[in-house]
Image (cartoon, rainbow, N blue to C red):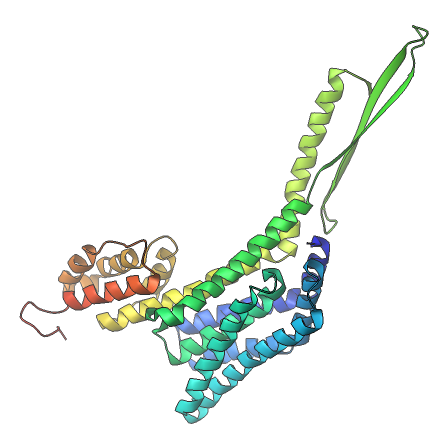
Amino acid sequence: MTVWAVLEAIGTIVAVINGLYQFGKNVEEFSGNPTDVNRQRYLSTYAAVLQSRNQILAAQTSILAAISDLDARIFRQVMADTLGDSDTAVQNLNEWHRSGSDASRALALDRSAGAVADMLRYVDVYPRPSIVFAHVEILTCRLAVLCEVDKQFAQSATTRAPLQAGIGLIRDAANEIESAVRRANTVRVFERRTSRPDPDDPGSTIYFVSAEVSYRNLIHTVSYTRSIGPYELGDDAYAQELRAARADAEAARHWGTVADIAHARVPELRQTAATLESIVRRSELQTLSSELDYSPTVVEDALYVQRRQELGVAEAARALVSGSTALADARPQLAVAIGQLAEDESASDAESLAAVIQEIRRGLTPAGGAREG
């Protein structure tokens, strides 16, 4: 991978990447508070992203050229077609809003799902860093469609699996870019040996050693250079000074690498993955809330999403029920029912959610029969 060329390409779309990240944040806000204002906010951000479509395609094509010899012309057309499918899905979504057409709703779901599926297939052909920014846009559009027309999508394993794979693709691409940046950031030590006749011992030779220790990061914002010697070969002072110079250069390398990783927008990619994942987890909460016939507070909503970063579905649901005074007072048997459910680490999140829903229904059903209202 020609890392500098990748960084250079990413540098041309910094504003676009920031827009993609904001698009994800706006969809996340809509998922938690689906008002017309929040809907218009994410659509406005998406419109701004659309205006930069050619920049995204050009940058991703440049990244591909830097790390692969695959046909760039075909790649660009493939990316453009897939992004076009995603755009059409959003248009179908807007048509559904205007007309209530079931056909438009189905098209929005099918086309957005197809675009994500295509991007996941392209991973077998194209390097992840070359498709990741287009993929972020496509995956965010898919989640926007789901948040509008199928708020409880998290309980469907078929719907959820591509979303999780898509979020994983973003994280994998971020890791690959970071690894390449770290490998390219190296401290260089150039050592030179010289000699001259010993003036005090005719016929003998004195050997000397000198060195230059240097470092410069990829975007040329951090550098270090130190010349050492010459010292007579075997002089302990040379080894001590060389160790000190290496330590200083390593410190510079640390900060230079941090700057390069930031320039590659690796933090934004990881933040975007976390944002999109929180949308999926909020759908879990909406599914649980529907089963519980309970509207979580803003704080409970935020706590559930936060807890799911560390906890499984069952544990997070247990914390929701036990932490809610309203639920605990009205339905004390719920905490007992969910508390008896062990977290199955081998189960998918959709399967775990289904198990929790089953326990909720048991907990809400009196011993005699009908479910409590």
